[in-house]
Length: 482
Image 1 (tube, rainbow, N blue to C red):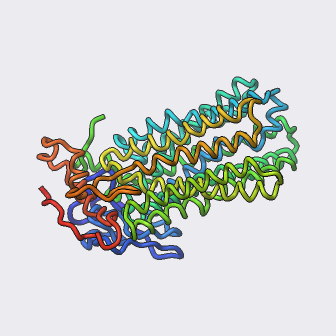
Image 2 (cartoon, rainbow, N blue to C red):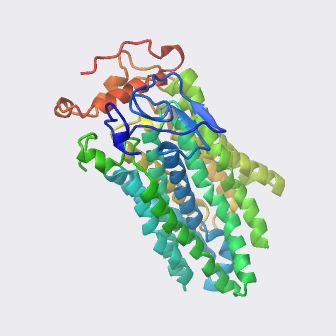
Image 3 (tube, rainbow, N blue to C red):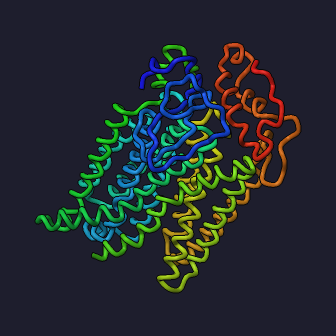
């Protein structure tokens, strides 16, 4: 919908406003936040026009349309990034790959997105998530097509590295959801969008072997069939990029560039394959419910215990994932290993959903940068563990998994040190006399406040009081809106 369809004051922040959609099978609401009844949306919205309801099976514009465009784009990038993995036995024989080559390609596929995720955060802040998502998806399409023409191990590693850049759509995905949905349901929304997108890593384990078999049965040789199969994810990139450009919208009030020109948004400056695939797919496909569950659990705990509940949820889920990763490495039978892998997967992916139940509250003004750093950090950790534990013969796969689990548990401990002065931390209460407005207004200088650039942050602070938890919502006085 265009900005002219909305009466009253539009949202003043590129980091938030919200949406419309008809009631369908799955609906989650945040009733504790006041509704802006002057805004013409199908869904009730808060003062930033962020949706207070999440209706999963709706395609109404702009909110649920944005949700579906976002996760499907991310899903497409996951499919292409890991499309080579289920076909490695064929590709290995065709290109004469060694174990080291295969390991290096695995590291490369996730390393490429470390830099691109950092850049994507800035792109979202400056140009908006629509351009960031669409341009990246279409710019990486040629690299997916290039996989069909690889003729050496070096080329194979290089192309997988470049395809990995597309995983920065994770940042635009999480950023986009944070601009459209209210803080009380953002954990569930972010978790669902990321989880369904990550599910592409599991879907590709089924899709690529199926395409390979279909193409081979049509008369192609195995060494030709795997190359032709890569044209499918390549075309998906182009199609999704065009759909995002034509159907997407940065904010509920309109696109970022249009609102900036109108002065309504402040502008910042700066066979065996099949069997193996089914087993491997169980890890990725767990995203269907695991990430949304992590986001939902974060939202649920926040309603009762505030931000401290979100932090405890994150620590619990990620620690559980780490413990079962250790047990997976020590498993001595296939059924036990699969059971531990599924529980590890659920814990790890639910923790990802819970992480993005916290991220939107760290900095409203720099949401893109924070999301980019968080996403890049995840990929850096993925590449690091692959390099340390799985690329040479020093450790067996089981030992590597156990070490990785230990690292997960250890890296989760610092969550206890996260302290929001207005809400507290896992073990300590909030700082005395500090409320939401104090925290978020500090993101602007006195000069910027005189220009009213901070008004969006004031609205966000008001809508974030639910993070106090339980009976503390609305129990403390807040500073005047000056």
